[in-house]
Image (cartoon, rainbow, N blue to C red; front, side):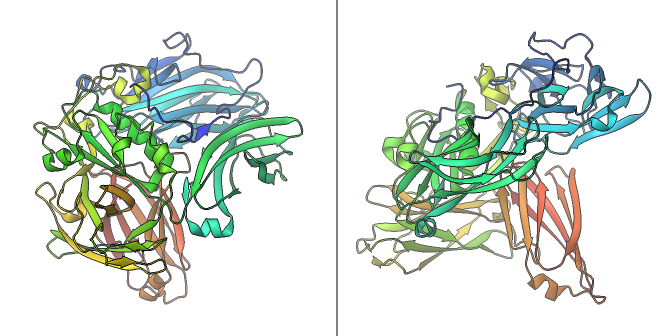
Length: 628
């Protein structure tokens, strides 16, 4: 298995073109020969060398090289794993390009390791002089191919020497492709599909649910046409293009999609104008009594040479389902081993995974999960924010349960089950913390470049199960003898941090309603056990505006203003700083808080430290750990 094998019904396929179509004579960086072409130079300005032991391929002392990546053929790569606190300065310089009216610079890039986001800037010198302009600066590139466009019209009639400069500090690998200049031509879009697969009875009652998109016009300006949503029955909704849509312009679009109880609805988004129809993206939506939150159990091991293939499967699931799926990875015969849990899964080889503990779904990949995801959801569990003990060792958990139909629980058949999980990084010198790797195909993404023994510092062990009690038998008598629709039932329990966690706040709770007769999970939920958010911070959630986990949303409620009235009547101010676990400063954002506000933080998936300072007459500064 060299590529995530999800069925079409699982995947949100991006069909539309993702690169600009440029005019004749425009410049294109041609890497098809497997080397940098004539006139293109690479330089390692700092002289820092990547650690050769971190690479099976992609290693170079020149800052940039060319190799294959997934389905993109040959791309430009900058290795940045240096084990140094000094930023890289790896320069990829294009030949001199004469800029004409209406031309854009466009490219696509990604961070090969989703937990080690790359940074870079795009610069240009003008007319062979020392005058340098910055065209773009990317602080945290996504882990899926992301398009970028810069309007070069203001430099028409000039000659630009454009450089891509990777500035990452001890990351892993920046990939770059589809680099070109020219006037965008024709009809072309990049689509970020933000729709959620699952919805509950509220959508069924309304008869519709939202299908949000973000779209980048990578072609010529548009002033006509429509974005449509169709089902097998025909067109359901549409939004007309009433104002000119400029080349390089992002737009947010939300279309209504039909929702009917216990019904799967295939939806196709397209651009239409007269006889022209360009499919853009497609996804099957499922509406039931409650929104599904699926639980996937994975059996894995650091010594397992094929387990990285399982990681790619799970990452593909998370890109499709986002927060509506929880992953529980259970290790065997390694420093994170949870043998009781592994034995209860009933697997005889790894990697293996199953959905909602359904035995028939067990496989080495997730290709058959769709057969069980689009089934009625008759129960819901919601987790309240955890209460942590003063010594940091315990957490009190509260779950609320509802059902869509009467359930006889006189035999204690239905119970709350739970697992405590956490994520771990091996570190540079951790004995035994490594991952074996047998991936050899370009489609294996970053694992194609990682060596057969992945160093601890580059090996992340995510969603790892740490507990067993309550995971398969559930908590006895945690639900009443009869469960009635319209009633809400509460279950409470306490969790103690195991030895692998210094603090309970490092963990996450995955809880679920367990049918102990079949061993299957009816529905699940997940919360982080991070310390209480800073005063006024009510919510942090993922926003996959670029098809990945790169943005957090942080909302502050009105009660914050009661704590921080400004004596002069000015809005309260805030400042948010983000740091990685090594103490590196990732970003700083500030603003005003008129009542409540949304702050978008371009952070990659992984663990970050947020320091939130709230101004006013009673300034507060609080730190918190978040796991995206």
